Amino acid sequence: MTTSTPTKRKSTSPPRNPDTAEMTQFTGRLATYGFPPRMPQRTFQTREMSMVSDIVSVIARNNEVGLIDGAPGLGKTCAAIHAAQALNVPAVYLAISTNPDPNDIHRMLLTAIQGTRATGSRVSMEAQLFDLLPQWGGLIVVDEAQYLRYRGIQTLRYLHADGASRCSMLLAGWEAKKIVNKHEDLASRIAITYQFTGLDDDELVPFVRTCFPSLKKIKDTEIRQMNEIYAHGMPRAWSKAVSLCSEIEQPSFEAMTSAFLMYRGVAS
Image (cartoon, rainbow, N blue to C red):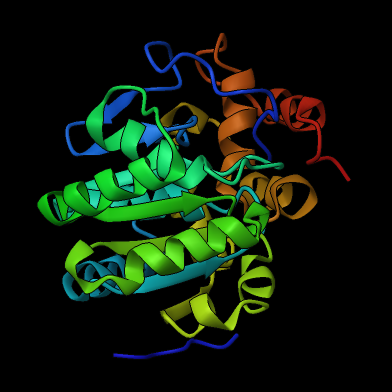
């Protein structure tokens, strides 16, 4: 099945001991390598989340590759993880660094799925993966896919090309489509491409009211005003601003405005 919908970076230091925070069992069916996005305590089903849920369902059922492109802070990866959880699909989250090692994909996958740090040569890790992936049969979520280099792209293509691996993949990142399209051998395997956008105008107030009940003092008009000036439809911006007001039981419009101004990269 082939469908096309038109249209940060992790430290470059060596991986830390997987016995610490980097090797986290985030939920019962999500293994991670790297720091997964912090999942909100409350969720509001936006149109983009519904679309990602449909994409995850299709690629997981058919062992396909999908790609979600979009600016940072829109909730691409959160939507993918939420969809996998809701659909009861086992998933691995991989955070690609800005300067990945050629063997990163093999090591990260094995470490995340096995729960113990992977060692050995590229060839031995590859052999282990081909033994392990058919038994696991889950979804590989590759975050910050724009940082993939040639070797990483070839690894993903090779793993997916082997039909016996029975795994699906979802690549997510900012301008990831541009990077992947330079490598036709992987690009040709992408069944669904989707351009992820921010909150729609009619979703904004219900999203804020549902996800951040502490903001009940703030008027709808003030929510729209802050979004237009600071948040620009980015769920991450709202989450960061609210977290900066965590010591205030019911933040005021003035407190939230100050929080947005303190959140670097949002004020404009």
